[in-house]
Length: 197
Image (cartoon, rainbow, N blue to C red):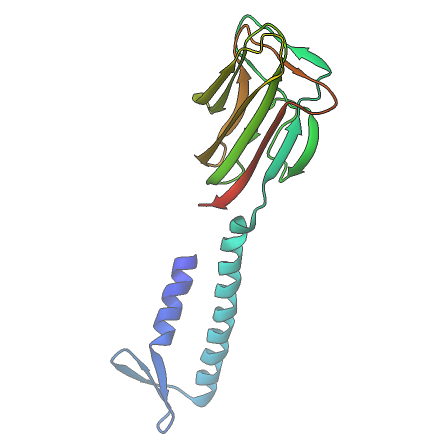
């Protein structure tokens, strides 16, 4: 639809009026029109200009999308260890613009194609390993491993990712690992859209 409107505008822009003889010149052809027909064509042309502007505006709407989230784990104690890798679910909302993060599954779903930035902080204080991974769909992007030995140790990571609409990003706790949190929100997962593509 947009292409045909643009082509029509190009054709009409090559049209000019020779006032002295009331002729319309389209390319190399001359056609006789009455003044009322010429005025009607002008009105139609003016109407098309407005419709192209509104089409261009609607095409730009995805560029104005705002996506940003930050969630804490909502834990009051420990999570893990488990016999296999598990997705960490962050349930306590700090900020959620665009509603692209699910506090039920712990998964961010890209609402549009673009470049996004993600960051996580996870705390370990036990004698278990603190090993967490950032995933894009089913691909591990990065892995951060610490051994707290009873002290406070953070696993911190971040990445800038090009995502397609519908791509998933999430954090997994590796098997035999444990995270700890309380109301101070030591464990967080955040992300935001840098720019659409």
